[in-house]
Image 1: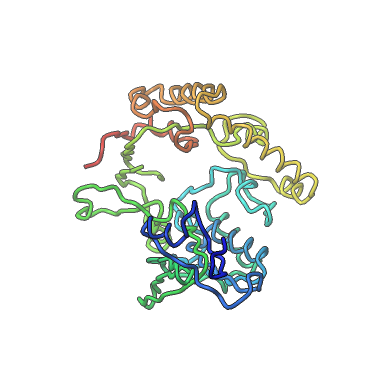
Image 2: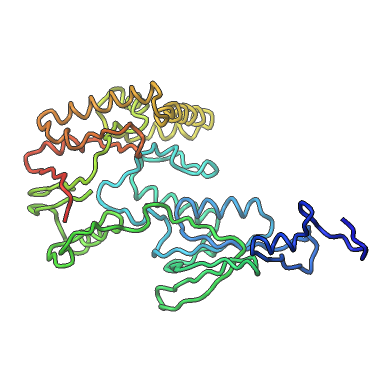
Length: 366
Protein backbone atom coordinates (compact mmCIF):
# COMPACT_ATOMS: atom_id res chain seq x y z
CA UNK A 1 0.00 0.00 0.00
CA UNK A 2 1.05 3.65 -0.42
CA UNK A 3 1.05 5.77 2.70
CA UNK A 4 1.02 9.58 3.00
CA UNK A 5 4.76 9.81 2.42
CA UNK A 6 4.20 8.52 -1.13
CA UNK A 7 6.48 5.49 -0.59
CA UNK A 8 5.17 1.94 -1.15
CA UNK A 9 5.08 -0.13 2.05
CA UNK A 10 4.65 -3.92 2.14
CA UNK A 11 2.02 -5.13 4.57
CA UNK A 12 0.84 -8.51 5.83
CA UNK A 13 -2.63 -8.78 7.40
CA UNK A 14 -2.56 -5.10 8.09
CA UNK A 15 0.90 -5.12 9.66
CA UNK A 16 4.13 -4.02 8.02
CA UNK A 17 6.82 -6.61 7.34
CA UNK A 18 8.94 -4.83 9.90
CA UNK A 19 6.28 -5.44 12.56
CA UNK A 20 6.04 -9.08 11.49
CA UNK A 21 9.79 -9.53 11.85
CA UNK A 22 9.59 -8.12 15.36
CA UNK A 23 6.78 -10.51 16.25
CA UNK A 24 8.79 -13.56 15.22
CA UNK A 25 12.06 -12.12 16.58
CA UNK A 26 13.79 -12.41 13.21
CA UNK A 27 15.32 -9.80 10.99
CA UNK A 28 17.28 -10.24 7.80
CA UNK A 29 17.50 -8.28 4.59
CA UNK A 30 18.97 -9.72 1.42
CA UNK A 31 22.06 -7.79 0.31
CA UNK A 32 21.52 -5.63 -2.78
CA UNK A 33 23.93 -6.64 -5.53
CA UNK A 34 25.31 -4.14 -8.01
CA UNK A 35 24.24 -6.14 -11.08
CA UNK A 36 21.06 -6.96 -12.94
CA UNK A 37 19.27 -10.16 -12.05
CA UNK A 38 19.76 -11.66 -15.53
CA UNK A 39 23.45 -10.83 -15.87
CA UNK A 40 25.82 -13.71 -16.57
CA UNK A 41 27.98 -14.69 -13.65
CA UNK A 42 30.30 -17.54 -12.88
CA UNK A 43 29.01 -20.16 -10.47
CA UNK A 44 31.46 -22.14 -8.39
CA UNK A 45 30.72 -25.66 -7.15
CA UNK A 46 32.77 -27.60 -4.61
CA UNK A 47 32.23 -31.34 -4.70
CA UNK A 48 33.46 -33.80 -2.07
CA UNK A 49 34.36 -37.17 -3.55
CA UNK A 50 35.63 -38.44 -6.90
CA UNK A 51 33.54 -41.58 -7.20
CA UNK A 52 30.64 -42.31 -9.54
CA UNK A 53 28.50 -39.43 -8.21
CA UNK A 54 31.19 -36.76 -8.15
CA UNK A 55 32.54 -37.64 -11.59
CA UNK A 56 29.06 -37.80 -13.11
CA UNK A 57 28.02 -34.50 -11.53
CA UNK A 58 31.09 -32.71 -12.86
CA UNK A 59 30.31 -33.88 -16.40
CA UNK A 60 26.59 -33.06 -16.35
CA UNK A 61 26.84 -29.68 -14.61
CA UNK A 62 29.64 -28.47 -16.87
CA UNK A 63 27.58 -29.46 -19.91
CA UNK A 64 24.40 -27.69 -18.75
CA UNK A 65 25.73 -24.59 -16.98
CA UNK A 66 27.50 -22.17 -19.26
CA UNK A 67 29.94 -20.55 -16.85
CA UNK A 68 30.76 -22.93 -14.02
CA UNK A 69 33.89 -23.40 -11.96
CA UNK A 70 33.89 -26.97 -10.65
CA UNK A 71 36.27 -28.28 -7.99
CA UNK A 72 36.43 -31.85 -6.66
CA UNK A 73 38.27 -32.66 -3.44
CA UNK A 74 39.13 -36.33 -2.90
CA UNK A 75 40.80 -37.59 0.27
CA UNK A 76 42.16 -40.77 -1.33
CA UNK A 77 45.22 -41.00 -3.55
CA UNK A 78 43.16 -41.97 -6.60
CA UNK A 79 39.69 -41.51 -8.07
CA UNK A 80 37.06 -44.23 -8.01
CA UNK A 81 35.49 -44.04 -4.56
CA UNK A 82 34.29 -47.45 -3.40
CA UNK A 83 36.05 -49.12 -6.33
CA UNK A 84 39.36 -47.64 -5.29
CA UNK A 85 39.05 -48.58 -1.63
CA UNK A 86 37.46 -52.03 -1.95
CA UNK A 87 40.22 -54.05 -3.60
CA UNK A 88 39.91 -57.33 -1.74
CA UNK A 89 40.11 -60.60 -3.65
CA UNK A 90 36.95 -61.36 -5.59
CA UNK A 91 35.42 -57.88 -5.23
CA UNK A 92 32.74 -57.74 -7.92
CA UNK A 93 29.70 -55.58 -8.59
CA UNK A 94 26.37 -57.31 -7.93
CA UNK A 95 24.65 -55.21 -10.63
CA UNK A 96 25.09 -56.34 -14.27
CA UNK A 97 28.01 -54.40 -15.73
CA UNK A 98 26.13 -53.04 -18.74
CA UNK A 99 23.68 -51.35 -16.36
CA UNK A 100 26.32 -50.23 -13.86
CA UNK A 101 27.81 -47.42 -15.92
CA UNK A 102 27.06 -43.93 -17.18
CA UNK A 103 24.40 -43.90 -19.89
CA UNK A 104 26.33 -41.13 -21.67
CA UNK A 105 29.66 -42.99 -21.66
CA UNK A 106 28.98 -46.66 -22.17
CA UNK A 107 31.46 -49.48 -22.27
CA UNK A 108 30.26 -52.32 -24.49
CA UNK A 109 33.30 -54.48 -23.81
CA UNK A 110 32.90 -55.62 -20.20
CA UNK A 111 34.69 -58.91 -19.64
CA UNK A 112 32.00 -60.42 -17.39
CA UNK A 113 28.28 -60.04 -16.70
CA UNK A 114 29.12 -58.91 -13.14
CA UNK A 115 32.29 -56.88 -13.64
CA UNK A 116 35.31 -57.24 -11.34
CA UNK A 117 36.04 -54.22 -9.17
CA UNK A 118 39.38 -53.49 -10.83
CA UNK A 119 37.69 -53.33 -14.23
CA UNK A 120 35.09 -50.87 -12.93
CA UNK A 121 37.89 -48.76 -11.47
CA UNK A 122 39.68 -48.72 -14.84
CA UNK A 123 36.41 -47.70 -16.52
CA UNK A 124 36.07 -44.69 -14.20
CA UNK A 125 39.66 -43.65 -14.91
CA UNK A 126 38.94 -43.80 -18.65
CA UNK A 127 35.88 -41.58 -18.14
CA UNK A 128 38.00 -39.04 -16.26
CA UNK A 129 40.56 -39.09 -19.08
CA UNK A 130 37.92 -38.83 -21.82
CA UNK A 131 36.26 -35.78 -20.28
CA UNK A 132 39.59 -34.26 -19.20
CA UNK A 133 38.58 -33.95 -15.56
CA UNK A 134 42.06 -34.33 -14.05
CA UNK A 135 42.49 -30.58 -13.62
CA UNK A 136 39.25 -30.40 -11.60
CA UNK A 137 40.26 -33.06 -9.07
CA UNK A 138 42.60 -32.55 -6.13
CA UNK A 139 43.61 -35.88 -4.63
CA UNK A 140 44.64 -36.31 -1.00
CA UNK A 141 42.60 -33.26 -0.01
CA UNK A 142 40.11 -33.95 2.77
CA UNK A 143 37.15 -31.66 3.42
CA UNK A 144 37.00 -31.25 7.20
CA UNK A 145 34.24 -28.68 7.54
CA UNK A 146 31.79 -26.43 5.70
CA UNK A 147 29.78 -23.41 6.83
CA UNK A 148 27.10 -21.48 4.97
CA UNK A 149 27.26 -17.67 5.08
CA UNK A 150 23.79 -16.17 4.70
CA UNK A 151 25.20 -12.70 4.22
CA UNK A 152 27.64 -13.73 1.50
CA UNK A 153 25.42 -16.39 -0.06
CA UNK A 154 28.32 -18.81 -0.15
CA UNK A 155 29.72 -21.94 1.41
CA UNK A 156 33.07 -21.62 3.16
CA UNK A 157 34.76 -25.00 3.03
CA UNK A 158 37.77 -26.06 5.11
CA UNK A 159 40.10 -28.37 3.21
CA UNK A 160 43.11 -30.26 4.59
CA UNK A 161 46.01 -30.98 2.25
CA UNK A 162 47.06 -34.42 3.52
CA UNK A 163 50.54 -34.25 1.98
CA UNK A 164 51.45 -30.85 3.42
CA UNK A 165 49.23 -31.12 6.52
CA UNK A 166 48.01 -27.61 5.74
CA UNK A 167 44.44 -26.38 5.94
CA UNK A 168 42.89 -23.77 3.67
CA UNK A 169 39.43 -22.28 3.20
CA UNK A 170 37.75 -22.45 -0.19
CA UNK A 171 34.41 -20.89 -1.10
CA UNK A 172 31.60 -21.65 -3.51
CA UNK A 173 27.94 -20.93 -4.17
CA UNK A 174 27.14 -24.64 -4.16
CA UNK A 175 28.48 -27.49 -2.02
CA UNK A 176 27.95 -31.03 -3.31
CA UNK A 177 28.51 -33.91 -0.91
CA UNK A 178 29.22 -37.03 -2.99
CA UNK A 179 31.10 -39.31 -0.61
CA UNK A 180 28.58 -42.16 -0.73
CA UNK A 181 27.68 -44.53 2.10
CA UNK A 182 30.79 -46.71 2.00
CA UNK A 183 33.60 -44.17 2.11
CA UNK A 184 34.59 -44.57 5.76
CA UNK A 185 35.67 -47.96 7.10
CA UNK A 186 33.95 -48.71 10.39
CA UNK A 187 35.51 -51.19 12.76
CA UNK A 188 33.24 -52.84 15.33
CA UNK A 189 33.68 -51.58 18.88
CA UNK A 190 35.41 -54.67 20.25
CA UNK A 191 37.12 -54.26 23.60
CA UNK A 192 40.82 -54.99 23.25
CA UNK A 193 40.94 -54.75 19.46
CA UNK A 194 43.85 -52.33 19.68
CA UNK A 195 45.85 -55.00 21.53
CA UNK A 196 45.30 -57.69 18.90
CA UNK A 197 48.71 -58.84 17.64
CA UNK A 198 47.52 -60.49 14.44
CA UNK A 199 46.80 -58.86 11.11
CA UNK A 200 43.71 -56.65 10.79
CA UNK A 201 42.18 -56.01 7.37
CA UNK A 202 39.05 -54.03 6.53
CA UNK A 203 37.37 -54.70 3.19
CA UNK A 204 36.79 -50.96 2.67
CA UNK A 205 40.49 -50.15 3.11
CA UNK A 206 42.20 -53.20 1.72
CA UNK A 207 45.99 -53.28 2.13
CA UNK A 208 46.25 -57.05 1.87
CA UNK A 209 46.56 -56.92 -1.92
CA UNK A 210 49.75 -54.86 -1.60
CA UNK A 211 51.13 -57.18 1.05
CA UNK A 212 50.34 -60.26 -0.99
CA UNK A 213 52.18 -58.84 -4.00
CA UNK A 214 55.12 -57.27 -2.20
CA UNK A 215 55.74 -59.66 0.69
CA UNK A 216 54.29 -62.90 -0.57
CA UNK A 217 51.60 -62.93 2.13
CA UNK A 218 49.31 -65.96 1.94
CA UNK A 219 46.09 -66.90 3.69
CA UNK A 220 47.02 -70.56 3.58
CA UNK A 221 47.15 -72.31 7.00
CA UNK A 222 45.93 -69.14 8.75
CA UNK A 223 43.03 -68.95 11.20
CA UNK A 224 40.75 -66.16 9.98
CA UNK A 225 37.87 -64.44 11.75
CA UNK A 226 35.52 -62.74 9.30
CA UNK A 227 33.32 -59.97 10.62
CA UNK A 228 30.45 -58.90 8.62
CA UNK A 229 38.35 -65.39 1.92
CA UNK A 230 40.36 -67.01 0.40
CA UNK A 231 41.53 -70.48 1.47
CA UNK A 232 42.29 -70.55 5.16
CA UNK A 233 42.79 -73.22 7.78
CA UNK A 234 39.76 -72.08 9.76
CA UNK A 235 37.24 -69.28 9.32
CA UNK A 236 34.91 -67.84 11.95
CA UNK A 237 32.18 -65.71 10.40
CA UNK A 238 30.68 -63.19 12.85
CA UNK A 239 27.24 -61.98 11.73
CA UNK A 240 25.55 -59.45 14.00
CA UNK A 241 22.17 -59.14 12.27
CA UNK A 242 19.87 -61.20 10.10
CA UNK A 243 19.75 -60.60 6.36
CA UNK A 244 18.12 -61.95 3.23
CA UNK A 245 20.67 -63.74 1.03
CA UNK A 246 19.13 -63.72 -2.43
CA UNK A 247 20.09 -65.03 -5.82
CA UNK A 248 22.09 -62.69 -8.04
CA UNK A 249 20.32 -59.72 -9.57
CA UNK A 250 19.08 -60.44 -13.11
CA UNK A 251 19.69 -64.14 -12.48
CA UNK A 252 17.18 -65.17 -15.17
CA UNK A 253 19.13 -63.12 -17.71
CA UNK A 254 22.35 -64.73 -16.50
CA UNK A 255 20.86 -68.20 -16.95
CA UNK A 256 20.01 -67.37 -20.54
CA UNK A 257 23.58 -66.32 -21.23
CA UNK A 258 24.94 -69.50 -19.65
CA UNK A 259 22.23 -71.67 -21.20
CA UNK A 260 21.35 -73.08 -17.82
CA UNK A 261 21.26 -72.44 -14.08
CA UNK A 262 24.03 -72.76 -11.54
CA UNK A 263 26.67 -70.28 -12.71
CA UNK A 264 27.37 -67.24 -10.55
CA UNK A 265 28.74 -65.14 -13.43
CA UNK A 266 29.28 -65.18 -17.18
CA UNK A 267 32.51 -64.43 -19.04
CA UNK A 268 31.71 -62.84 -22.38
CA UNK A 269 33.31 -64.62 -25.31
CA UNK A 270 35.16 -62.68 -28.03
CA UNK A 271 32.18 -63.33 -30.31
CA UNK A 272 29.71 -61.91 -27.77
CA UNK A 273 31.82 -58.83 -27.18
CA UNK A 274 32.08 -58.28 -30.92
CA UNK A 275 28.28 -58.47 -31.23
CA UNK A 276 27.99 -55.63 -28.71
CA UNK A 277 29.74 -53.32 -31.16
CA UNK A 278 26.58 -53.52 -33.28
CA UNK A 279 24.56 -50.56 -32.02
CA UNK A 280 21.16 -52.08 -32.73
CA UNK A 281 22.04 -55.39 -31.07
CA UNK A 282 23.58 -53.66 -28.05
CA UNK A 283 20.57 -51.35 -27.58
CA UNK A 284 18.22 -54.33 -27.61
CA UNK A 285 20.45 -56.16 -25.09
CA UNK A 286 20.42 -53.14 -22.78
CA UNK A 287 16.66 -52.65 -23.04
CA UNK A 288 15.96 -56.28 -22.15
CA UNK A 289 18.38 -56.10 -19.23
CA UNK A 290 16.88 -52.88 -17.85
CA UNK A 291 13.35 -54.20 -18.34
CA UNK A 292 14.16 -57.27 -16.26
CA UNK A 293 15.83 -55.27 -13.49
CA UNK A 294 12.97 -52.79 -13.21
CA UNK A 295 10.26 -55.44 -13.38
CA UNK A 296 10.97 -56.51 -9.78
CA UNK A 297 10.51 -53.05 -8.27
CA UNK A 298 7.25 -54.12 -6.63
CA UNK A 299 9.19 -56.23 -4.11
CA UNK A 300 10.02 -52.95 -2.36
CA UNK A 301 6.32 -52.28 -1.65
CA UNK A 302 4.99 -53.70 1.61
CA UNK A 303 2.39 -56.42 1.18
CA UNK A 304 2.56 -56.58 -2.60
CA UNK A 305 2.06 -60.11 -4.01
CA UNK A 306 5.47 -59.94 -5.70
CA UNK A 307 7.13 -59.08 -2.39
CA UNK A 308 5.39 -61.95 -0.59
CA UNK A 309 6.35 -64.39 -3.33
CA UNK A 310 9.96 -63.15 -3.32
CA UNK A 311 10.13 -63.73 0.43
CA UNK A 312 8.80 -67.27 0.04
CA UNK A 313 11.30 -68.12 -2.70
CA UNK A 314 14.34 -66.58 -0.97
CA UNK A 315 13.52 -68.23 2.36
CA UNK A 316 13.02 -71.58 0.65
CA UNK A 317 16.39 -71.31 -1.11
CA UNK A 318 18.19 -70.28 2.09
CA UNK A 319 16.74 -73.24 3.99
CA UNK A 320 17.72 -75.56 1.16
CA UNK A 321 21.35 -74.38 1.08
CA UNK A 322 21.66 -74.53 4.88
CA UNK A 323 19.89 -77.88 5.22
CA UNK A 324 22.96 -79.56 6.74
CA UNK A 325 23.20 -76.84 9.42
CA UNK A 326 19.62 -75.68 10.10
CA UNK A 327 20.71 -73.89 13.26
CA UNK A 328 22.42 -71.29 11.04
CA UNK A 329 19.18 -70.69 9.14
CA UNK A 330 17.40 -70.06 12.45
CA UNK A 331 19.90 -67.30 13.26
CA UNK A 332 20.29 -65.79 9.79
CA UNK A 333 16.86 -65.70 8.13
CA UNK A 334 15.14 -62.38 8.98
CA UNK A 335 11.69 -61.86 10.45
CA UNK A 336 11.20 -58.64 8.46
CA UNK A 337 9.97 -58.37 4.83
CA UNK A 338 12.24 -58.61 1.82
CA UNK A 339 13.79 -55.26 0.74
CA UNK A 340 13.48 -53.54 4.15
CA UNK A 341 17.26 -53.63 3.83
CA UNK A 342 19.09 -53.87 0.54
CA UNK A 343 19.07 -57.43 -0.73
CA UNK A 344 22.39 -59.23 -0.45
CA UNK A 345 23.14 -61.52 -3.38
CA UNK A 346 25.54 -64.16 -2.12
CA UNK A 347 26.40 -66.90 -4.60
CA UNK A 348 28.33 -69.56 -2.71
CA UNK A 349 28.14 -67.81 0.66
CA UNK A 350 25.51 -69.98 2.34
CA UNK A 351 27.15 -73.12 1.01
CA UNK A 352 30.48 -72.01 2.49
CA UNK A 353 28.91 -71.67 5.95
CA UNK A 354 28.25 -75.41 5.99
CA UNK A 355 31.91 -76.30 5.38
CA UNK A 356 33.76 -78.17 8.13
CA UNK A 357 36.38 -75.45 8.60
CA UNK A 358 33.84 -72.61 8.93
CA UNK A 359 32.25 -71.55 12.21
CA UNK A 360 29.16 -69.31 12.21
CA UNK A 361 28.80 -66.97 15.19
CA UNK A 362 25.78 -64.70 15.63
CA UNK A 363 26.74 -63.36 19.06
CA UNK A 364 27.52 -59.70 19.61
CA UNK A 365 31.26 -59.04 19.73
CA UNK A 366 32.22 -57.48 23.04
